[in-house]
Image (cartoon, rainbow, N blue to C red; front, side, top):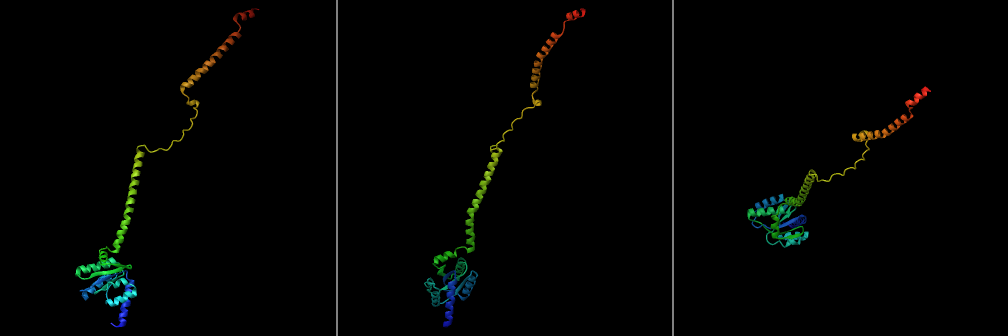
Length: 234
């Protein structure tokens, strides 16, 4: 590899470092070319790129990219997985390959500008995928709201049942009655038969003295029989 080729590799690795969401440093000792190709294929499906570069060139690339943390991981054979997708999915792919082949060990890495230890990388490999985490997070947020809606619905339903029971028992407040209209004076036709008879009897009693007085006047004014005879004889 001449100088220009080395410079091109340094530039390429520096660009990979700058553009990666996460970087995993891996001890690749014992891996065959065929196994490396298979691992590279599996990681590419997760949005990651597996690359083996000489440590000396990687140091130059780290200096150019301003990634000082990566330089402390460059002891012994070191490969890098530059992750541009879900870090958990990429770490899980590496962990699965390690479990199946007995090869590869995490050495550390960086994510979002923070240094990652081997323990943290192992923990990331055990995480669910990002989409699964999003679904779980949404479920956690929705659970209290769902419970609240159900609780309110139950309370409203119970209140409606209680109000209906109160109404059926006649305990519900009734609307105030309108004041009764003033009773009209009874017409003569509406009077009781007893009252009409009493008034008629009173009227008859008032007429009796008048009739007696009239009879007395007629008696006093009428001439006696004797007087009429004397007048005729004379």
